[in-house]
Image 1 (cartoon, rainbow, N blue to C red):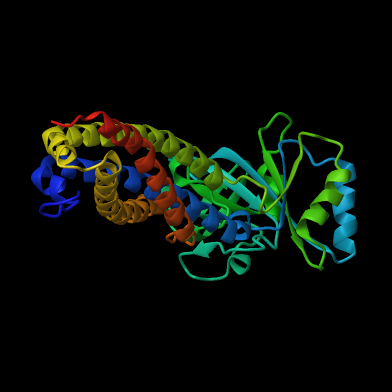
Image 2 (cartoon, helix red, strand yellow):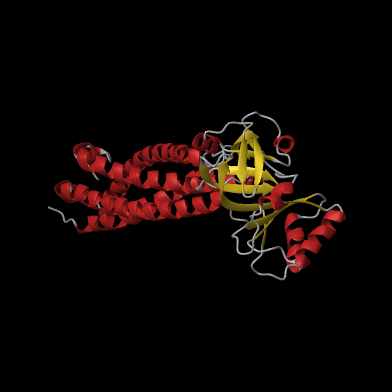
Length: 382
């Protein structure tokens, strides 16, 4: 303005505290959404990449519901004989296990493993003993829920298929464990030497076969996987590295993040429209004040510059509140999901996601503020 008492840019906010508060809340909602969901997605990606070997218990994972093709099996054997690989075969399927007197039975998830499993991570037992020293032929390691439902205890016998196994310990965690949310029946670990005695490998049985491989030499994991893929004639047999394989954890988190993205997009649009409406209402309340300012000599550029400062001030306050809220929500999501995820999968604040949220938040404020700021020029002098 050319003369008179200097006009303070924050004066409209003080006189229209309700609209200013709503504007700050809209900005805070947008920044909370961006910070929480963008940061959480990055945090998950970092955690899965950092712990990928432990989540799959191997460098290379071969999956099939049919027998491994002879050509591929021979290629693996050659690499093992040359000292480049170690392998451990696993058979996963579901079956009913029973007490010896047939008074109780439980539908369970059987996991028949060869010595060497797991190559990475650790199968944690209640006794704290090493898994490889506890699981022997003729024995089984079960979850506590199986003992609770059958009334058995460690040391008792359990009928599995056509054989009887002695329960030697209780498993509390396994590296490549499916999400507990989708686990049907308690886990039962069985030594591979007892596979034929089970009598459950009949034709037509739905058995998930896995071959876990650990690379022993300096050959890059992806190069070794490519070599094995060339020897694989069956497209139904999937060969992945620990970085490309999709674990049950990763599938769940990918779906969960997609849901969060849809929710976040909806919240962002609502917050942006609220921001625009609130700012328009604030300027309309100050229509007479703006007209007086122009009447005493203020130019459109001067008025717009001061209201841009006001938008920046309120946006800064809302951004600070939104960042704090977003980080809190991000940690809250990690805490909510923690019981369903492997216990050693650790989350941390992804500051790259926070920086991305700040940039996107500034863009949202600018985008939804442009129209109200542009319409300032239409407010005429008195």
